[in-house]
Length: 553
Image 1 (tube, one colour):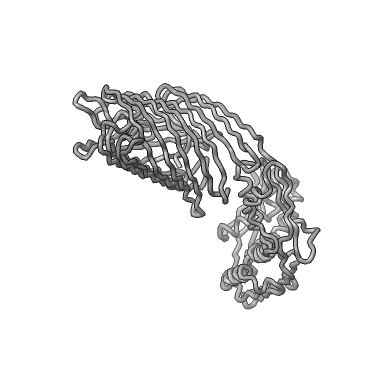
Image 2 (cartoon, rainbow, N blue to C red; image 1 turned 90 degrees about the vertical axis):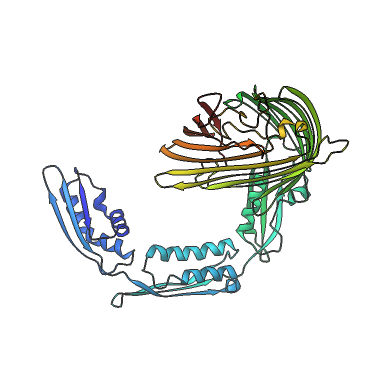
């Protein structure tokens, strides 16, 4: 096997030399005369590779051998001291001289004084200045001087760059090509303002906002650089609409709910003002829901919506049965910080059976929810968190049968560990104040157990019990979980976990725990989780098999 051995170099220098050596590309069957020529050429290539990293004093000894099977080359290299950059002078001319961001970039580049010379960093320095010019509208910018002087005897280098940015251009007229929504409504998504200084950041922001709006399949926005007049660059924006109607259907299985059948419908554009409509139906033996919602974008359609709608829910668990209907109005706002807020008023009627007793309750529930989710990768997060806060309540009156107040907070946090592992922690705390617990609908009582609660127990198996041993739910809920996940293949992993907590009342707190092992598959459609867990406290079964899909952030 052909072999090129290098000694005496740092990892970075050795890598650069190997990338430069022509000899590295040759195999054992290459002609001996060619290997000899490249071996002679190697000294020049080594010198060039080391100079690129600032080593101008390198010396090397070399040896080439041939045997019956192949050839072997040995290079013993002493790189010598690295050239030190002792001065960096960057001069800006034109409008960039008064541009704060441009000057901050130059200050950052000047901070390389005292570092070892690296020709790649020098080229990057020039590229960053040119990129900044294009980003901030200096389209006629050019270098008047680009000088790198190396004083080999003194082992120093000086850099001098003079950049004439010329005049900075402004945004001109914006030509919008679309015919699906009112022009005034589309204008609300556009952050580019005529006669403001040009920045590609604003173009990118407009592109992202329009792309995420849900109305458009493709967004094409770009400056017309050939048509700059009076220092104004016109902007061309062409919008390609998504299909108005969207249907989806799904089949699945969840150990908490059994076989799943799902269907959804969306009308993305009910009118030219951007109103849209969603309808969803999810069917399973344990939990079935049907919802419909009409949404109206508000003055800032990027972040603010008003919606109204209704839904039906049927739930049949080992602990209770319920059938409920809901009418709701919601005001949604997305903050710049990443928090999402929903303020709502719900009118709920629920008929339920718990503790073998049938009852029904009418509630008028104002409230709010706040959610923030951060992840480094939406499909396969290794670092991130999710935090959710919910508050709601009612006051007894002709359209609300009981007085109650309820609040909950839930958090998930994941962090990478060595050896392609990660830790996932989860916690949830809920509390309810109510004047008549027997009239509190089961949908607003707390239960524990199941895939996303305490594994090792069946779905909503845990909670306070009556005198006959029937689970009737509680006023409070506490759940904590810690999980270790280890990748074993590109798309596969294994997990070990322990969960604890319960639903309870303050006069009888009983903590339950479960532990187990699981398999993880990061499929093209998202995370698939399969867990086998055993209860560490008394339970109706000796183990539970849990299956679910989707990330927890």
